Length: 224
Length: 224
DNA sequence: GCGGAATGTTAGACTTGCCTAACAATTAAG
DNA sequence: CTTAATTGTTAGGCAAGTCTAACATTCCGC
Image (cartoon, rainbow over all chains, first blue to last red; front, side, top):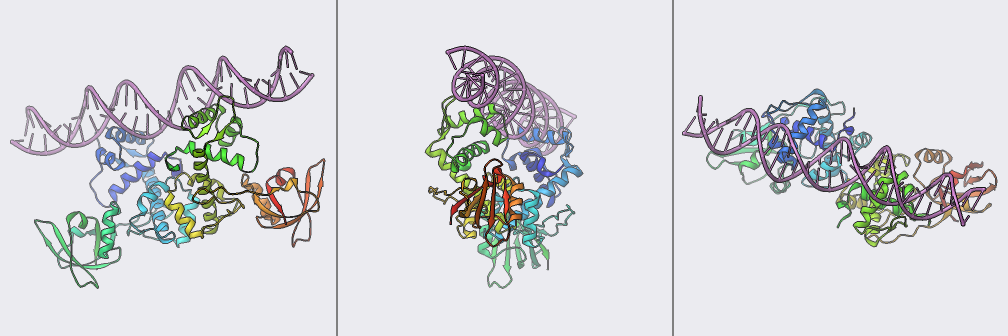
């Protein structure tokens, strides 16, 4: 069954469960899902039960929520759609990287597999989206996220940004001001323990910038 | 209220009513609407009643169906979306003109006004879609369809194709084979009364082609 | 290891859009 | 001009997805 046969709601649920495990290993809960989807916990609980009945997730009452192989396949297909759409909107239609998330969130439910293939061709089979997130390939091959949170990087380390969470457009605009984007190299200067402020300097810049804990936890880096 | 606040169904109903009056003056009926929308007449009847309650159409039981000013505005907005999307798919993503209709039919419900504006910019504000249909402007200005059906053109007349109905992809592929497309010039050679076959010759071609009544009624032309 | 707080589930209701079946109105044929 | 066919409407149901309210379970602090 193609992913487009699932209801919009089912597509959203699966993608969210998958996303939650991409960059962290803490399993997702019903209330977190409800909050992210903008529905009541009762609605999310119900939805999960339906997905379980369809064999797309495993879930016993009060138990953990896990994707089955089939569920993961559909989730990855949705993530691929989302990230290709974001890349397309930025590269072809001149969107800012802070403007693409919501638009892609809607379009991903409407596009055909054919259109996604055309977009992929037109972009030359990109492997990362505008926020640095890896774009799963058409055959749903596992892709390997890597990197650590900037907030976990040791002081005096040299790092390269690999991805920036697109959850908060406001924060993306702030990062743009600071010149922070995927593939930008920077030095972690200091981390003040109590205030949890991370001081960084962008390569090529002549001054430091301070990031609060939320900002530093939205940026993933690798040593470099 | 923006057109995107309407339900998908309402958007479809309004666009269909508008489309029905663009190229012909016979008013649309409940059963024709139901058939075009792929629903039962009872469903269409119900839907129209709801639109009437919202002030988007006027309709008394068993009476005619007419758009109000507000309904027409929304309908035109949907037609604009549809035709810009079709144009974009052909010009930017390499779709064939026979492949765009269904895709646009779905996307038109999902795109934002912002995205439509970007597409319009990117295409340089086109005025006609791949089938020759006029693209309403952003301010919903009335646009003036013109032309007569090829099936109504007199024999020995020289005409230019202005539009070709995109209702039937199969027929579009046939027209592609014959080299028939918007802006193509041709001569009407003959119309045989009983079989209703129209014989034409494309400018530059060295042989005639015969069109059945359905095909000749899918092509609009102007004298030229 | 108890008890309250947090989290998750169930029950019942509402909305939208669709259906079938029965009925009403209009149209058209003879 | 009458009646049969066509067309349109209403009534009643169903499924999906949402809600609130009530209830169940689990977790955590003491």
